[in-house]
Each structure stands twice: as C-alpha cells, then as structure tokens.
Length: 172
Image 1: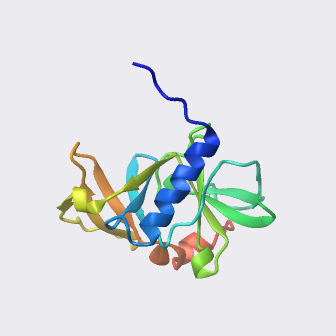
Image 2: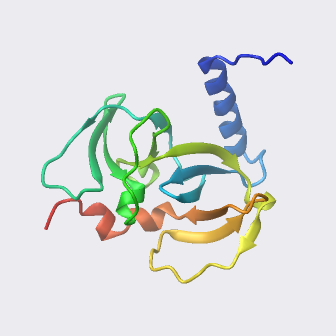
Image 3: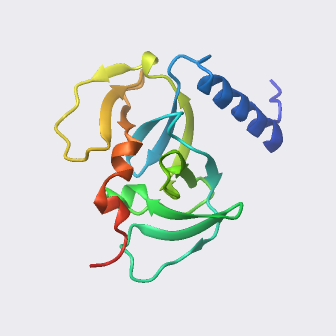
C-alpha cells in the first residue's frame, strides 16, 4: 500500500477549505479541538481565530508564570497565555507540536493561548453529552465524550477573556 505524500501547502489549503465550509454552515456544528495540558477542549469556529506554530516569544518581566510573553504574528503583537498553566495545570512544553491559538480578535483583545496541540475539527453531534460537574471556572461549558471515551470541554472564550484573572498578568 503506497501512501500519498501531502505537501504542507496542500494540507493548509485543505484545512482552510474545511474551516471555511464549517464557518459557512456546511459542516454540522463543527468545532475546533485542542489539547491543553491534560484537557481536551472544543471551541466554536466563530470564536476561534487562527492557529499558528509557536513563534519566538519575547518575555515580559514581572508577570505571572503562566504568561509566556509577547508574540509578533505578521506585525501584530499578541499576549501569550499558557492555557494549561493558567488553570493550575502543567506548563505546556514548547516543541514542534505546540500551537498558538489566536483568540480575542473578535472581542477586541490581542491574546493567544499556548496549547499542546491542535486536533482539528470535531463535531459534538458525534459525541455523547455528559453532565457537567460543578466547576468554578466560568469558561468551562458543556462536556462531551467521544466514541473513544475521551472527555471534551467546551471553551467559552467570551467568559475566559472577561475574567480579571486572565487579563491581569502582572505580579501583585
């Protein structure tokens, strides 16, 4: 069996087509899946922004440990938050799989979440809803289990970006 090699350009074009068709409603409630720490997250495509490989980051002194620094992405500066560490989890390794999820542009905030990996499009319609346990984090929405039993949490970006704890990066 021969495997067709896919160039990076073809992969990106295919992904853009899938995201565009999903945003246009051609995919039934497709959501973006990401892994942050040990948690699997689903984001609405309308809320999620661009996914980029981890660029060089400029550190900012006197900030909280979960604030990774500033990233320059095509001339725009974004504050980068380690999403796992922000929630009290492990620091996200900075390797070839790590990605920045540009969020907040829709809400007027230049922010990016550092995640372990982007996992592509997922459909909650193909998952089993799970009862949400009491969670003090207001950005945690509905929960689902995929056919393999993996628990996915819906990320409410509006609630995350509205948290003073998320916005206040300076050490007290």
